[in-house]
Length: 392
Image 1 (cartoon, rainbow, N blue to C red):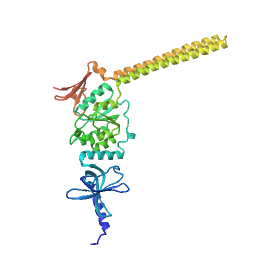
Image 2 (cartoon, rainbow, N blue to C red):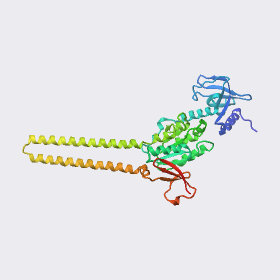
Image 3 (tube, helix red, strand yellow):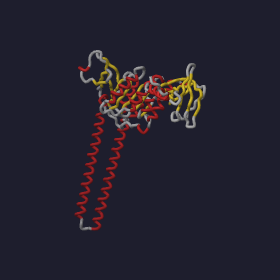
Image 4 (spheres, helix red, strand yellow):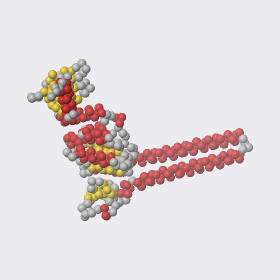
């Protein structure tokens, strides 16, 4: 066997270590010793426990303000390699925190810092939801309080929108894959204007799924604006930081992405008054101009009474035409208002009708007795709320 140069051996060992993906994303815990800081700002130290020690380096571009103390126990995140100049095993750190903060808190802060460096939280990439959404997607539990709050607020605030539910677990071991599948399904819905990711309040650990890196990247890549309404006002997750709009609760999330129908009606009324006022001013201005021209003609050419009469006749015609046009525009506004009123589903419900929907993962309207069978659970929506029913 041919003898290897030391450098070749060390390089080979380094290549073997760095080819192992498991050694590129590690958390270790130990006691700091031999801490020093170079003129360039790099931090060198060792981490040790009762049985072993490993050399570590924290470069100046990673956590530039971090300072360590000998004897301090810390969590460190990074990767394993070999420092070829000494043939020494080395841990390249990119994040360090005292052990007292807890491993989960340290992991969450490391993820937040890393995603922030990648630009996932940049305000410049945040998208505004459309002013008048027609189709709103919701990712949440189909049986939780969040979906009921969202439906209630949407029914009163902007009933013209269609709600598309993508059901998912929002806590527990199955929450992350469920949420990812729901987001993927919702991304394929045609005509979707905005998406809401929501869940009700709970303990901090109940929101763990929304601190998962995979969820953050799925929200970042979602094709339409995403609004989050997670937990209570005091809670903030990684998903909130990535989302285009953040709301403190599911109900507030609906308010952040929809207009208030009452304000829309007030705007229509205000525009109608403004149009009438502008039309009256235009008529008055044109009449003054016509009268002034007629007066000038009479003063300069007294014999042109016939021309003055024609001008007066034309003025009457112009006034009538303007009035007719105003009447047509007013009729168009009234017709549009009537159509909007006719589209309001609450008007139908107030006349005694109801909306009956099947509850089987996706809410589907029941339009025929052939669509139901014994034992089916239904939701019956009336003018002031909704209730469950079962087919007997």
